[in-house]
Length: 125
Image (tube, rainbow, N blue to C red; front, side, top):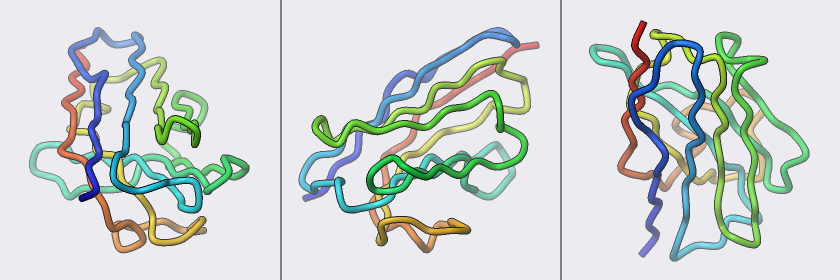
């Protein structure tokens, strides 16, 4: 059974930083893309960042470019999301996911088939 466990969320002031981690068990992630998604209250879940199977290619939505960094350690079956210069609009539940493919040029939820339970990130103004 595949399990993804996110950690690192919490409450932070605007301008602060958090580092999310996602440890995957029951499935080797080294051949697959990994992604971070988020869902704010009243909004649909959407992609935040995405990284190819070997870490060589990354994708970010425009609103987090230059502030967030996705990385992975295949030896640890883990993906990370470093979030700097956080803004109140970054407040959401953040989910990690394992892709169906090595990389998706325009990632959507349909490109991922295993999900974590989410971790809350709250940014106060």
